[in-house]
Every structure is written in structure tokens, then in C-alpha cells.
Length: 133
Image (cartoon, rainbow, N blue to C red; front, side, top):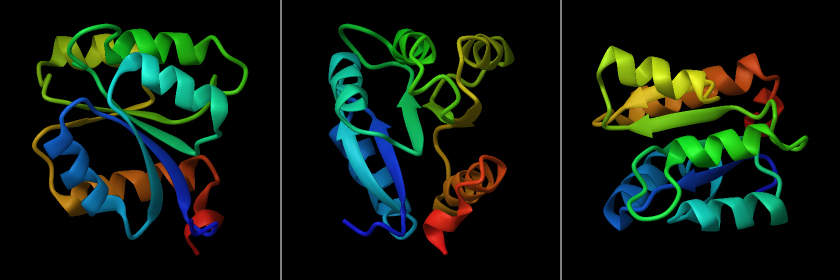
């Protein structure tokens, strides 16, 4: 694992989406994966991540909003950037997702450039940019 890259947790239940997103960000980040809300909670307890990419619809179990709300109640992740990565595109959905604690939002489908630009902007805003220089 390259220590000079951002450490990102990708929470996504779709193996295909995980693969595509990981391919998009591999050049700027070390990526770890969680395919469910419970796995995301376990990974965040065991590791420290610079940014979390959070799918909202995770299938059975906790959804991305529930995971985000739980993470925001912890000292470790109360201010970590959590980017909602979701197919929910209605303005009401976006407001609900951001109100639940996601710091940023990107709707599927998105381009590699769009996602990378967002991650790099977030890293700059949160003073994480030294991780990718």
C-alpha cells in the first residue's frame, strides 16, 4: 500500500460498481472495500480512512444513511469527509442525504474525471492534499 495516497473506504454493495469506482480512483487513492453497512462499521473501527465513499442503497441491512449517522456519532469519524455515491438524484433525496451527515454528494452515473475532481477538491478542502503529492 502506498502511504503517499489517500486512504479511502468504498462502501458499495454492487461488485461491478466497486470494480469501476476502484479503477477510477486507483491512481489517487488506496482503496479498501465494504459491501454492507455492518462491514463498513467493522472496517472503520479497525482502520482510519481519509475519505469514505458511501453508497446509499446497500440492499439488506443498514443503508448508507444509517451508516453515516452512526459514523458521525463517533469521535474518529465525526469530521471525516463522507461522499454519498448514489443513484438518488432528486433534490429532496440530496437534501436528506446531506442532512444525515454526508459532506458531499455525487450521483451515478459519473465520469472518472468527475469523481477524481471531487475527491481531490475534498482532499484540498480537508487539508489532505499532502497525501497525493
